[in-house]
Amino acid sequence: MSQRRLMDLWQKRGETFGKRSTLLQRAEALQGIVHETLRFLEGLEGPILDVGCGDGIPTAMLVSHFPLIGVDFALSMLNRARAKLTSADLLRATIDHLPLQSNIVPAVTCYFVLSDYADREALLAEMQRVLLPGGKLVVADYSSEDDFNNILDELQKKVLGKDRYMFRLDPGSLSREVEQAGFEVGTFRELHYTLRIQLDTFISQLYLSSVGAQYREKQLTHSQWRRLLEDKLEGPDIVVTRRFALVLATKTG
Image 1 (cartoon, rainbow, N blue to C red):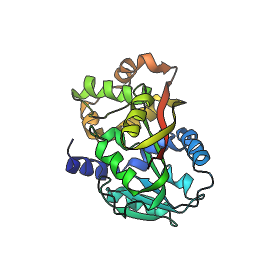
Image 2 (tube, rainbow, N blue to C red):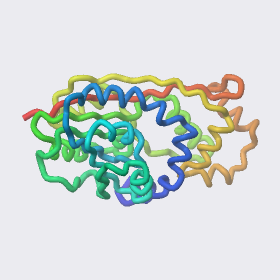
Image 3 (tube, rainbow, N blue to C red):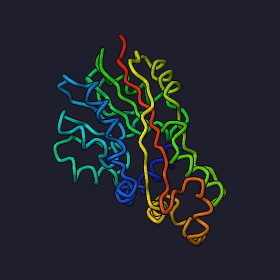
Image 4 (cartoon, rainbow, N blue to C red):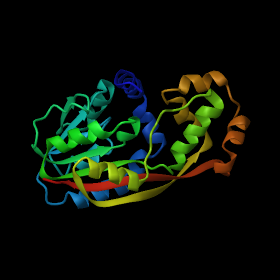
């Protein structure tokens, strides 16, 4: 997917992203990642650079601990973030050309950004560039075995007949990419979170997605949705395991 198309997509997603995040209990799901981040960055004075800050989750969980700079290219996302992160400096820019000097920040966080890119080398190199020598990097993204995204992949193929073009990595693969970008990896692991969501709520959040209008056009009945998702249903609820890849690393040199 081209950079321009990706920017347009996230600009559109920003219009409903907050509602969708609430339905999916996103803040609760990310607490483990934030806890690991705070432990890793303990003692730093900041500022922390959050690359691809989006609408401010999980950035909002960091801003009470560190001075924070957030960067995102979607104005709709930044406007939502500004409403909740009044003490942060938020900048609009593409993440492959960060608007900062080299060797200037002590830590960079990057949550659920790399999965949008087939080629992550330039993005990681840019994060490495702005970090001070010995600076710390936290990268978290959807693992290749994340139940929820795998369901979305399958649904889009079955119902809409097209791919989502979303890339996911297991922790080991992500760790190797970070190492190749000039970092020493201290920790790489997979974090798990069980998500139980009512079927009606799942459908509602799907209709809020960037392809929600296309799903609505199909006019699937409740019974059809149940058949499509029957292997994940427990009574009225869909039960999935969210799996996130986490890498904690230090800039070498």
